[in-house]
Image (cartoon, rainbow, N blue to C red; front, side, top):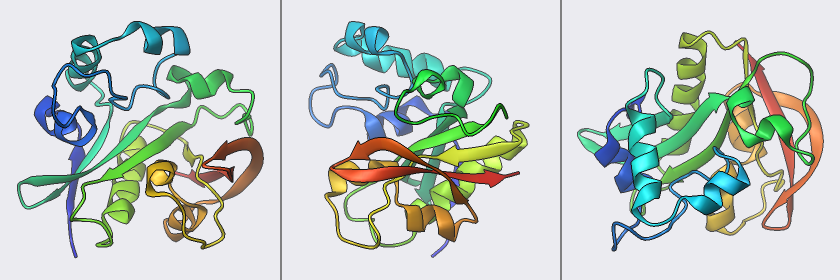
Length: 190
């Protein structure tokens, strides 16, 4: 299947993917927990979270990419320079070197659309997005589940196999886990 992947400049489409499903001012993640520091994350409650994301979609550089099946948004991937993220100071996901890499760290595919290759399209789109914005390399911090089934809630970080399929290579092990599964640093030079 072919999906189009575009920069996440539509707030409504981003909200469809990462916002609350029922009550618009609920304090759900909005994909902010790894984008902002912990203090800021805790301070943004209710509708403030959505307004923060709205501002991100209005910046010159979008906060990620969206996948579409025709005109229907079906997927999201967060991507940004690592220096702008809490990952820049992470104790559990260390720096490989001083290269100003970009990070891709969150994948969401809408229910009813999973198993169709959308995560692969999103990762390819994130790579293109980072390259188009001058990134020398891009990293991801997926779980190394060694092909075993895992909780879909914790699969938002991606899997090592997903990244390997997109030309990434293992750059380093980490002390981080997601859903009890070790995470690794996967990198692709651009």
